[in-house]
Length: 309
Ligand SMILES: [Zn+2]
Image (cartoon, rainbow, N blue to C red):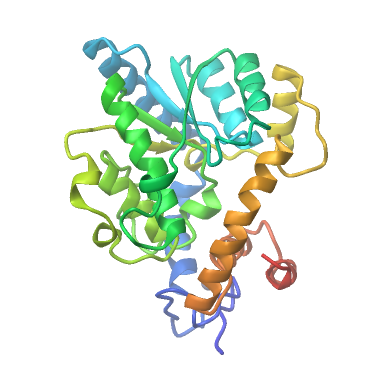
């Protein structure tokens, strides 16, 4: 099978094309837009502008909050909230999606982190009819349910911005045009945002999966990915959280080990289904992105790809 000479992506990867030099279309796109994607100051400036516009809209509508911020319990989202508050002076409503509300463990932990961050928060859960009610892949229904609820909340509280902590490697893994891709374009409604999310996952035509009425046509809120505009190392994230909320680094991946373990089962299942359907593991695109941007060598990416999902 052919492989990209730069990032190592195989020819069975989603919509990949190769040029006469054996370089893939995703590497080609990145090269072409490198000046935008790596322009740290300009990116932060455009993020700041989005926040300022959001604040003005919230003021005009009398909303209590400038933004909704997704909080998973992980250190990336904790860091994002911390920065939104301290650097951008946003009035934040953190929202947490509780996959298994019957399990009490973890809830106290997340509450504790949010209290230390001094932000208001709201937790919602979706079980039963909400999950997979449309009869599609349960993992896709789960994802849809989370974003559906966030837009419901934004509508209810008239919040103009919804911030999420998706890593850059995920946002850009299938970027071969600027359309629907941050930082080039942001979504302003639920359908637009889900188009981005599902495109990342390699799902075509996500609108066809769900009932049109679930897309909340009348709710407008700009979905912004903090890390599409900020290049932050893991080290800086850890250091900031240690300093601001006294977080203790346990060596694990998450700030909250139980959350990671609870989510692990969902991810494992999704990864198996993905592999069966596509013929390559779900992290293929993210690893190729890390090679493309010089964060990993091709050998390191290959080794990580061999590891169990
Ligand atoms: Zn490539």
